[in-house]
Amino acid sequence: MKICIVSDSHDRADALELAVREARAQGAEAVIHCGDLIGAQTVKPALAHGLPLHLIHGNNVGDTQALHFQMGKSGGQLRYHGPDARLDLGGRRIFVVHYPEYGHAMACTGDWDLVCCGHSHAAALEQVANVKGGRTWLVNPGTVAGLAAPATWVLGDLAAMRFEVFSMAA
Image (tube, rainbow, N blue to C red; front, top):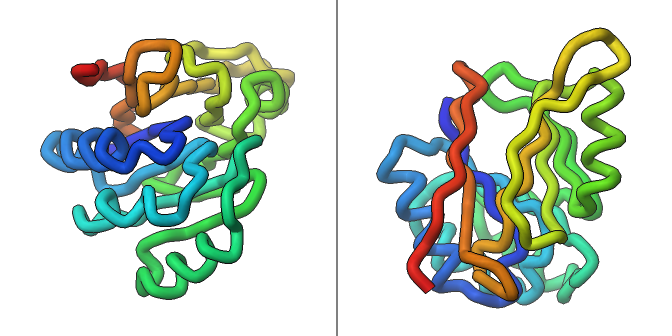
C-alpha cells in the first residue's frame, strides 16, 4: 500500500490538493496529514480525489468543530484524530504526531513500524534505533505549503517500507 504523507498546509488548499493529486497518480491509497491544516475548508479540494485522509491538528489547531463537521459530511473519508493518531494501514502500525521530538520518542519505543511528524517545515527521513533492538522509520514530510522552506511531501510504500520526498513548484 502506498500513502501520501503531508504536513503544515497552513490554509494552502491548492498545495495540499496538488500533493494529493500527484500521490494518487503514483498509486497512493490514503493520506496522512501531520497537522497544521488550520481551516477546515482547506481539506475539501484534497478530498475530491477520493482517498481517505487521516488528520491531526498540530499546534495551529484551527476550528475543531468545523473539522468535525467536515468529517461528518465526508462519509468517513476524512478522519480527524485530534492531537495524535494510531493507525493500521497496509498491515503497518503507524503513529502520527505533530512535533518531531515526540515523534522521535515514539519511534524509540519500537511499538510502531512508522512514525510521522511535522512542525519543523523540514523534510526528513530516518530510521531510529528503538529499545527493542530494531529500527523504526521516522518521517517528516516538511511543509506542503512551502512556508520558510521548500514545498515538500512524502510518498511511502508500506509493503517495501520505502519513502521518498517530493518537491513541488513554488
